[in-house]
Image (cartoon, rainbow, N blue to C red; front, side):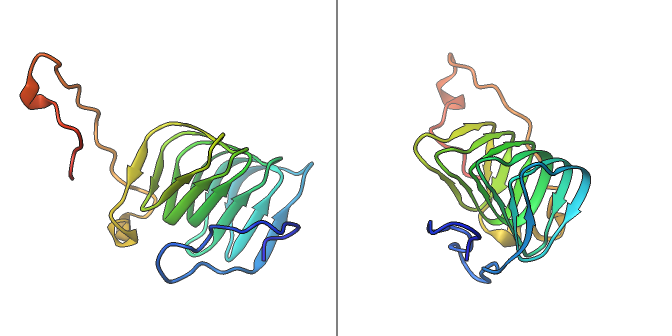
Length: 160
């Protein structure tokens, strides 16, 4: 159940184990947190958070009034508000139509609804096992500029 909403949630829709559907944490409007936030199960955020947000098995739900400037590591992340920073999710990231994400996303499944804003790079992982021991410390590959004059350097997709 998503607290205070009848909308269908995508949290837990990719592969098992399914993240929990029980809302255990709620940070309401008017709450400002600076530092590290750790949680289990589902955490709904209508607050402002600066720092780090971590959950090995939980799902983070950033509501329309939620404002986050942090590094996020969770099983699943849904964004309807604003997130600035790197998101690493074991199962999926969903950016709803009112959501805005400014930063890189590491996940096996990325869902972006019409009207959403995503300004960053998406790093599509083959599966949650690819995160393995490096959960939250995924190695970023440097951008390799391609020469337009050399047709051999141009490819439609990099399979890595």
